[in-house]
Image 1 (cartoon, rainbow, N blue to C red):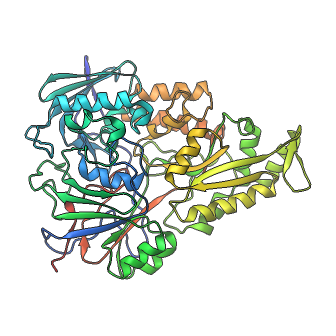
Image 2 (tube, one colour):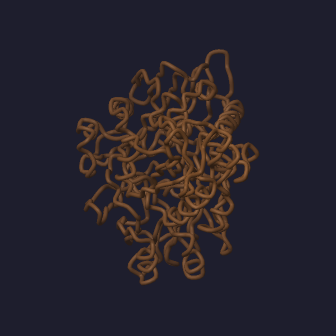
Image 3 (tube, rainbow, N blue to C red):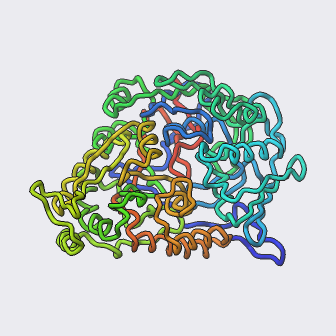
Length: 541
């Protein structure tokens, strides 16, 4: 976003600057970022929305099941700022405006008055301070840890003003405040031990819905807050939700979700599989949007000796044909990746020229480096086979098809790949253990800073690249309050990751929701996760 320089401070008018436009993915039926609305919204009614995974935790900043968790927690908590999906700009929400000092180490937020938490207590500067201090204290247990690098303190200036201070520049922080993980929670919640909030009973937010019940692996039921009146003005409905109740039903199998929508048992389903698009689009509304952030691809755990070798990483990149993978397991809704960042991410640049699909060159490079093929076709050097372990999550149907094809492509050049799948909890456990060479993953966020957690040396999920050049670039982008300057630095970051083959981009992710024809107003946020359901409604029965 554009920030205007003054002699003392950098002042940001929240709605002013415009980041790179976020582009919606389309499909043959004319998909949109929200379900269509053909008449006046109807108040009342219940919505049953299927998700693929149990949320694991309803603590907004806890480590849950990714998008399925965030779909629920987004309904419970509001954020200081709102990121507009149409252009990526930051706009008022719980904060009416903010400003930054010259070196992006201090951010002052003017807060909205008249807002209350669902327990009736007032939203104020102390609640913001308590929320941010709580995240900092939780450290790696919080998904927001990366946003608080160098956090010093949050100062209460008065009831309606806070100043958030960092010891080092953190220009990514304003964008981060729009995320669910930094959603503001009540003092009673922060007084509850972090690990005791998973069932949601202690989670008190200012959001448009409250928790009615949570049954693990079954459902989460939310009830409308009738007094809600402080949503982002730029959103379709800033007031109370039209729906009286929302049930998030856990339905792990994609085919069962589709069948249940068709039978009328569900009103909407998330994580629609590409193979079901043709079946659904003629009878149901499809809500689609390309995800910003890190694309799907191969992340190398460079703490492991085999993939710490640039020759091996480059050979793997040359052996994988992203277009073939996309065409085999997906459809044209999903773009072939041309960078570690998706093309809808502010700051994206095309780095596809860094390495091309060239299996012959991959074979020659491995042979020149002393990797000789064995009788089983897998190469070995100094008695060690080039057999690698790849971990992945089973929550997206095409993953298996993509990885089995990649496995075949790598074997052709003499690289063995063992695929270890798992649910979200199993994947997280595997990641933490460090017992893996490659991870097949993605990470959605509408800011190029999403890369810092993984690719910087001191990131919360650092892959161990130990790249001083890359570290310096991340330090630089954190000190740049100018959107133009950050875009240039993000281009350099992407180019460095490509040249060092820290990651092999394969395909972008497009999120797809299908809704019954009588459901309207479901929309994605700027991060292509389910936005608050204040604008959603159903036709009268």
